Image (cartoon, rainbow, N blue to C red; front, side):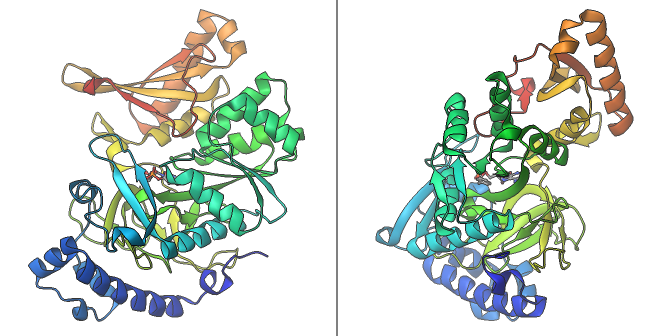
Length: 434
Ligand code: DLL
């Protein structure tokens, strides 16, 4: 079976728009009736739910931003009484109050179906043994993937993240065929296996579904190579119910299918808020059209991407969004040039002298912001001594300068000295804020 939900995954664009319109109208009525925050916002605009005549009216609605969720913590944006909730997740974020993700039983079922689509597209089947190394707990990764895997009838091993040696032992003993984790933790597992003398390529593991943080195509290839697997992707966020928002398919063309029967997608100019045309990069904005507990209108994710609408070689018609390489908050501006940490990752990963373990340090020198990249040297390079290291640093600095036009200091550090990730990797240390 190639699709989990053939009807929705391969629906004609016209039929999808009709379906979305019905759901969209229902949702706006629902939030207007049930959530005073939205009623007030729409009243302020003089907009009534019955004014909605087409999907184009979406652009007339107000945005919802992260601070709206924080200001209404914990249940101010909840459309149902607490007794109707069956689950509450939360994301800690980096600053301020956490963000809550409440679910009714129906929300939970829909989320599970979206996860089953994601896994089916990645080639996961009911006879697989899945090691789920996303963190279980408030984070949506652990339970979201668990539910999807149970739905398709596979055997889930709920290892959660961490205890990396044990992950590898279990992988050998249980003959795990599928791994779920963040990409950075997958790399940590591959490295630990090598240290333990385990050849991952000889294990039955064949597929990984990775996400929850930006990772480049180069990183995907690195993981595929080290583990001898096909690495697929999951994208999502707590505010929209967790993973299951978008997923890649066999085409692996750097784009992810969006579950657009559940979520309307727009790309806006992050400064003006104007909706951008297909193909143009901007901030991703989502409207949930099937959720009961917390259906957000025009939620600004801060993730930067673009969208394209074309039938995919996999047969799915679901709109595609480009892989997210970063959030607007993570963008660094150095000498007037905008850079995402993931661009640096791409440039480092094709350098043979270094390992894919790096951290970017942002400093202030006088009035200027500067970047320093610390990347682990391959053991042979490190052992060859100072001259070899200096030469490699110089070469990588030139490579980066040639590609993005700015001077970045590169330091090769000793193998094993950069903190390994067990969840979302911390790639940037901003010393300006220390
Ligand atoms: O990270 C949900 C998730 C769990 C997605 C497991 C995939 C797999 P949050 O902790 O709320 O939720 O973080 C959401 O993480 O806005 C993006 O900035 C980033 N993110 C998530 N998936 C990807 C991805 C989960 N595939 C935030 N590529 C989002 C790039 C991603 N960034």
